[in-house]
Length: 173
Image: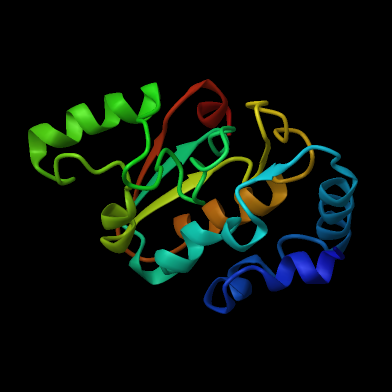
């Protein structure tokens, strides 16, 4: 994969917010590191920018920032803390769902946070990929310039936006 191919995975509506703020060489380096990865990468490349696909820049009202996707096969779906409905609930998501149940924001039995994303909650991780079975394994491969550009774009939008970093690594951003 080239840097241009990686950039092409970003939804068109978000590209102006990222173009000019992430140098081409950053995309090239990140793409090279992803290509060099010998382990399976989660989620599938078609879901790396899913959070941007389901939550447009102008719709963002809140950002929940996590560390990286779940490293277990089948759980990572491109939305921070979310797993497809019907799967076992990771501990971090369980805590979120317990709180959400008090407010009736997620239907009982669901584990996907897709309804939140559809209501303007950007569910973003600081790294958009992870090697299978190795949490934090892509924390230092070059996602930060991309995710920083996304966060700056959100912060520059008119209107209030709530930023909620969940976890030690997310708070460090």
